[in-house]
Image (cartoon, rainbow, N blue to C red; front, side):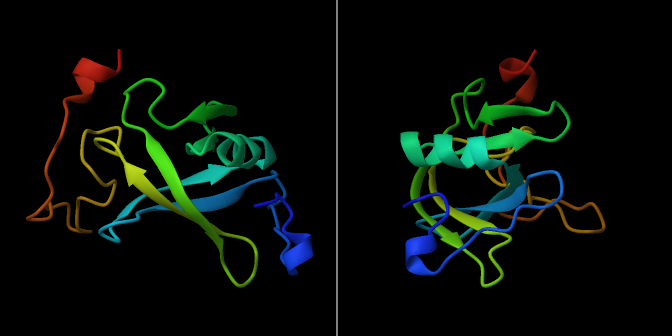
Length: 129
Protein backbone atom coordinates (compact mmCIF):
# COMPACT_ATOMS: atom_id res chain seq x y z
CA UNK A 1 0.00 0.00 0.00
CA UNK A 2 1.34 3.41 -0.86
CA UNK A 3 1.07 6.41 1.39
CA UNK A 4 -1.07 8.49 -0.94
CA UNK A 5 -2.93 5.67 -2.65
CA UNK A 6 -3.39 8.10 -5.54
CA UNK A 7 -2.99 5.36 -8.15
CA UNK A 8 -6.16 3.83 -6.69
CA UNK A 9 -8.04 7.14 -6.59
CA UNK A 10 -7.47 7.54 -2.83
CA UNK A 11 -6.05 10.51 -1.01
CA UNK A 12 -5.62 11.15 2.68
CA UNK A 13 -6.67 14.38 4.36
CA UNK A 14 -4.53 15.14 7.39
CA UNK A 15 -5.83 17.81 9.80
CA UNK A 16 -4.14 21.18 10.32
CA UNK A 17 -1.69 19.52 12.76
CA UNK A 18 -0.79 16.89 10.16
CA UNK A 19 -2.70 14.11 11.93
CA UNK A 20 -5.31 11.48 11.09
CA UNK A 21 -7.30 9.49 13.66
CA UNK A 22 -6.65 5.76 13.48
CA UNK A 23 -9.05 3.24 14.99
CA UNK A 24 -7.36 -0.02 16.00
CA UNK A 25 -9.73 -2.99 15.68
CA UNK A 26 -9.00 -6.63 16.47
CA UNK A 27 -8.84 -8.37 13.09
CA UNK A 28 -10.27 -11.60 14.51
CA UNK A 29 -12.98 -10.56 16.94
CA UNK A 30 -13.88 -7.15 15.53
CA UNK A 31 -13.50 -5.54 18.97
CA UNK A 32 -12.50 -1.87 18.89
CA UNK A 33 -9.28 -1.67 20.87
CA UNK A 34 -8.23 1.97 20.81
CA UNK A 35 -8.18 5.25 18.92
CA UNK A 36 -4.93 7.11 18.37
CA UNK A 37 -3.46 9.50 15.81
CA UNK A 38 -0.96 9.07 13.02
CA UNK A 39 1.11 11.56 11.12
CA UNK A 40 2.85 10.87 7.84
CA UNK A 41 5.95 9.47 9.59
CA UNK A 42 3.89 7.09 11.77
CA UNK A 43 1.94 5.83 8.77
CA UNK A 44 5.10 5.33 6.73
CA UNK A 45 6.74 3.43 9.62
CA UNK A 46 3.61 1.29 10.01
CA UNK A 47 3.63 0.45 6.30
CA UNK A 48 7.36 -0.32 6.34
CA UNK A 49 7.36 -2.55 9.44
CA UNK A 50 3.88 -4.08 9.57
CA UNK A 51 3.60 -2.95 13.21
CA UNK A 52 1.37 -0.12 14.40
CA UNK A 53 3.07 3.23 14.95
CA UNK A 54 1.29 6.34 16.16
CA UNK A 55 1.94 10.00 16.89
CA UNK A 56 1.61 10.98 20.55
CA UNK A 57 -0.20 14.31 20.73
CA UNK A 58 0.78 14.83 24.38
CA UNK A 59 4.49 14.08 23.83
CA UNK A 60 4.56 15.28 20.19
CA UNK A 61 6.56 12.25 19.10
CA UNK A 62 6.39 9.00 17.17
CA UNK A 63 5.72 5.83 19.19
CA UNK A 64 5.52 2.19 18.29
CA UNK A 65 2.64 0.40 20.01
CA UNK A 66 4.13 -2.07 22.46
CA UNK A 67 7.69 -0.72 22.44
CA UNK A 68 7.54 -0.33 26.23
CA UNK A 69 4.89 -2.86 27.24
CA UNK A 70 5.58 -5.59 24.69
CA UNK A 71 1.87 -5.53 23.79
CA UNK A 72 2.25 -4.96 20.08
CA UNK A 73 -0.15 -4.58 17.18
CA UNK A 74 0.69 -6.48 13.99
CA UNK A 75 -1.12 -4.90 11.06
CA UNK A 76 -3.40 -7.21 9.07
CA UNK A 77 -4.92 -4.50 6.90
CA UNK A 78 -5.31 -0.73 6.77
CA UNK A 79 -8.55 0.78 5.52
CA UNK A 80 -9.43 4.41 4.89
CA UNK A 81 -12.89 5.93 5.34
CA UNK A 82 -14.93 7.50 2.54
CA UNK A 83 -13.66 11.02 3.29
CA UNK A 84 -10.01 9.98 3.51
CA UNK A 85 -9.68 11.52 6.97
CA UNK A 86 -9.76 8.45 9.25
CA UNK A 87 -7.88 5.16 9.15
CA UNK A 88 -8.92 1.74 10.39
CA UNK A 89 -6.06 -0.49 11.49
CA UNK A 90 -7.10 -4.15 11.55
CA UNK A 91 -4.59 -5.64 13.96
CA UNK A 92 -3.48 -8.78 15.70
CA UNK A 93 -3.17 -7.52 19.27
CA UNK A 94 -0.58 -9.07 21.57
CA UNK A 95 -1.70 -8.53 25.18
CA UNK A 96 -3.61 -5.44 26.22
CA UNK A 97 -4.10 -2.48 23.94
CA UNK A 98 -4.88 -0.05 26.76
CA UNK A 99 -2.20 1.52 28.97
CA UNK A 100 -4.48 0.74 31.95
CA UNK A 101 -3.93 -2.98 31.36
CA UNK A 102 -7.22 -3.80 29.66
CA UNK A 103 -7.43 -5.46 26.25
CA UNK A 104 -9.48 -2.52 24.93
CA UNK A 105 -9.52 1.15 25.92
CA UNK A 106 -13.32 0.88 25.78
CA UNK A 107 -13.80 -1.13 28.96
CA UNK A 108 -16.12 1.37 30.74
CA UNK A 109 -19.61 2.64 30.16
CA UNK A 110 -20.41 6.34 30.28
CA UNK A 111 -21.60 5.95 33.89
CA UNK A 112 -18.14 4.61 34.84
CA UNK A 113 -19.10 0.97 35.38
CA UNK A 114 -16.78 -1.63 33.92
CA UNK A 115 -18.15 -3.77 31.09
CA UNK A 116 -18.88 -7.33 32.24
CA UNK A 117 -16.46 -9.05 29.87
CA UNK A 118 -13.63 -6.55 30.41
CA UNK A 119 -10.53 -8.13 31.85
CA UNK A 120 -7.40 -6.40 33.03
CA UNK A 121 -4.55 -8.34 31.41
CA UNK A 122 -1.64 -6.64 33.15
CA UNK A 123 -0.84 -4.25 35.96
CA UNK A 124 0.32 -0.96 34.43
CA UNK A 125 2.50 -0.26 37.49
CA UNK A 126 4.53 -3.35 36.58
CA UNK A 127 4.98 -2.23 32.97
CA UNK A 128 5.28 1.57 33.05
CA UNK A 129 7.47 3.39 35.53
